[in-house]
Image (cartoon, rainbow, N blue to C red; front, side, top):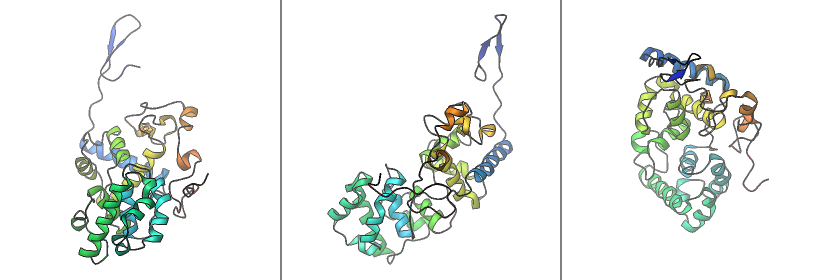
Length: 276
Ligand code: SF4
């Protein structure tokens, strides 16, 4: 089939020109975005942050460690770290060499040791050992940007926020919610399509979908529940059987990323580090 707006050869040798679909109006875009949100909420009613944590300090450290690695690898690494250093004060006063060894599996372990010890020292010295529950103070902590701050605010403090990671940025562009590539601009444009109260769950739904079905290289379009709503349908595998094989985590019958997933998670927990 010819792509929209391109000439396709007709049977008699004449060219048939397909008109490009007009861009949706603002109202149309908001409607489409919210329909996708509702559909994703049905597909992933159990969506949640995929880092294991028990308090804001643990979530902050785990989020910093998750740079350039998977949540699974962080979840397999943090139990030993938090058992050894249960508070910011403990981590602030740690031996860097010992911390490096504990977090080595997450990669970039020297730089990450500096970051998590530096921010623990700032928590100890400037915030009485508590993680602040507001954006202004969180982004003052060394190594904490808006993305990390929103993860912590949304999931440890119940403050709505949008997390623009690689999955989120890819999917919202596929859905034509924005053409921006800068995370702050994506956050603004996508945020304007939804009520603020939905921002945190929106982030979880979209990231869940990106990790399980709408992959970067091979989206599983033929097994995608939101295919009828998606302007990018056909960018990936459309054959249902082949698409089914591309599904990941609980959708593909595999373990999830959390060692301690919430009770409503329908998949299997992730194995500890080193387990088969
Ligand atoms: S139809 Fe394809 S491109 Fe669209 S959301 Fe589903 S997997 Fe992604």
